[in-house]
Length: 448
Ligand code: ADP
Image (cartoon, rainbow, N blue to C red; front, top):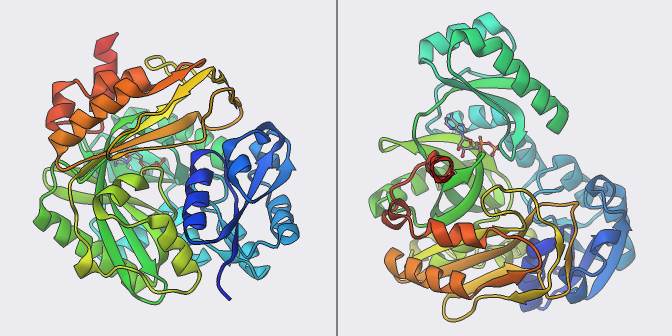
């Protein structure tokens, strides 16, 4: 018996995204929601809905017992975790499977290994991926840290093994600041992840962030779906993403994509994954792997025509990959703008009631969002309220269409990052694709 009812253990645009793929496959959906989300679009669209707790995520979207109970009472035969929340929680994946419910995600052991960035780096090294030079593993002795930093050269970056969302990392300019800055990163990591294990890496001066989308069937077959360039970041958080990268040639894509796909095949990786690299002076350096669907997955869908959520559901259901590497074509160019409910330039959060909403439309324009007029954005969760994804036959056409789509998009009642994106895509460096992970913060600082 194949999957017939999926519980979506998430909220917001990604819950809708999963609902849409499921319905297109003739599969029913169960929404779970906190009391704060009773009026949310993902709840309205789903076939069934179960309230799983109060607003705080720790008591609702992270509440394993409540989610499993919701799956049991609604007779769901599979759970899709989306991104964030429980998506990279290996224990949750195991609990789901132990209840005889299909887990629409990677094998728990792979989630566990890649969730520990030290183990992830070691695994990536063994699989032949190029690494950022640094400590061989976790490190806690300050003299040893200074010795390693002398060897690889300052600045270095201290990163939390359990890190995510850009938290728990500190750039260390010299030997004197090693101890105080590592301690700061450790206390941040302890507070955010309950784990202050640290490792050291060379701090690359001016790289781009380039990541490869991979997909495995769990049986030793794996493909890559090209790269995404996510270099426009603020505080290590992505703001604007595109595929393909303006700096990667078709030969480079084939070469590096071949390496990551082979690595995933060897691992027996199942489902969607992203292998993140920093790229500097033509060289790739592995930084981490995310064992889930990413926020920016639609740009890959736009240039490949592959529905990644459908593929995830198929693979979880024991089916083969629907596309072979040699049949994949990368056509055109796609850009995604993350639209947050926040001040476009101070980034102060701006939750509240949407008084008017008009999404952009037209050819090759996709808006993934749970917004509607009259909806109140609750203050408890991530500030991202919409993603605007635009496709064009080439990068220039894509930018022209994006400009037009941003003109059309209206969200009233709260502040959003739409004005930031309108300005961004007029910058000569963005138009030419000449930017690195430092660019956005420098531009914002100069703008003041
Ligand atoms: P997280 O899991 O918190 O997102 P990552 O390891 O993916 O952490 O790094 C997030 C971002 O931090 C990268 O995209 C990059 O901007 C910056 N970063 C991480 N490691 C380095 C490094 N060694 N040198 C320079 N920048 C880095």
